[in-house]
Length: 454
Ligand code: NDP
Image 1: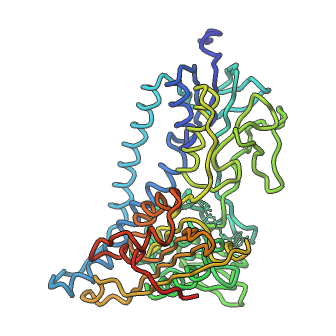
Image 2: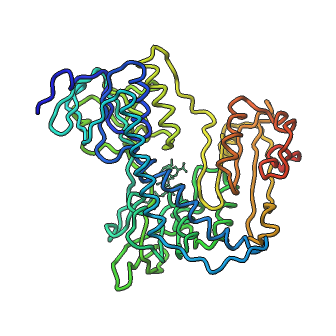
């Protein structure tokens, strides 16, 4: 049945119901805007369906293996542990289904209209979904990003993070290509669950962009857990063989595995979006160009989140969405602040970071004081696990401000979140020194480092 003009016009049409799109829709609707949001794949986007949420559940699942072994030193006798992939995978899917319905209810409750279908731009104010055209005063693009695979013969046999969550059978032998967030997190997950994992990184040291001390310390700790982490190596080709896939590597060696995961970056998800019917332009890396108020080169079209080339992090997209909705529908201009965005990599052990790396701080010409602490976590004095923690503070000597805080160790994500508040509030090293520690914790080390290492 054709919809009435009233139903097909709105103040804001949001394309994509992921982290950014859902938040922008809900907040704009709560501020009185008539909002329509279209999603062609899954409510909640990458984060909820094939990203942060299922990934963290799998990290929890994979940590049990080590915990069972640790328990022996504390007097527990745990029988032979056995892992069942189908149970973890299906329980995860049930939880994601529950979250999808919550997202649906939240959108409905906010008053926004949700459309199930791929949206395509027709012009600066018109969007088409399932053959129906909608008129909007403003359009927000929030279609996120999509994983990419490098170009090599046989790459059609490799999978991405979109597929790895729902593998039919457990990969006893897994090859991971890449040295960033996703590669390192999944290498840890499957290693913990019992796979034989090889991770390849094309450069000298993985986790580019993180502090160099953190990168090399994490590499050492990850290797101790059993991941075969190889640098200066890449995949050359992939061929199906009798018992899996044979990967030929750039160092001339070969490897037979069950599954190959390419975790080699995510590109803006703009295919079929119809940008060519508008004045929206892309930057030199292919991301949608938008200004500080999220406006693209087409004045009625806005964009935020992964597709715009900033930090590809859910909380960034959410914060941008809040700023967008308040600025454009709440008469309350908000500018997104990108300083001291904390982040964690849920590899095992975790990496957590806030602010500048030592290398970036030195590039700014700042005179620095560096504090480092490298220790064996208390728990492992009895568990016997060979794992160490590294904490590092970077202080601007002229202001005494802590401008970088980094950690490799359990719960780094949890610890760095709190530290980020202090750093955003302008905490100096003197503030850290005058803060009383919580004993015995690992986090107290951040307030007890007194002697600079350089
Ligand atoms: P990243 O950009 O983090 O890492 C991509 C990796 O792939 C890099 O090591 C890169 O190497 C390598 N690479 C790129 N192209 C090739 C190629 N042709 N051949 C071999 N290696 C290649 O991307 P991810 O895919 O891991 O994740 C995407 C983004 O998602 C992250 O940047 C992050 O913002 C977000 N994310 C955040 C998480 C969190 O908050 N915990 C978890 C997962 C993802 P090089 O360094 O040499 O370029």
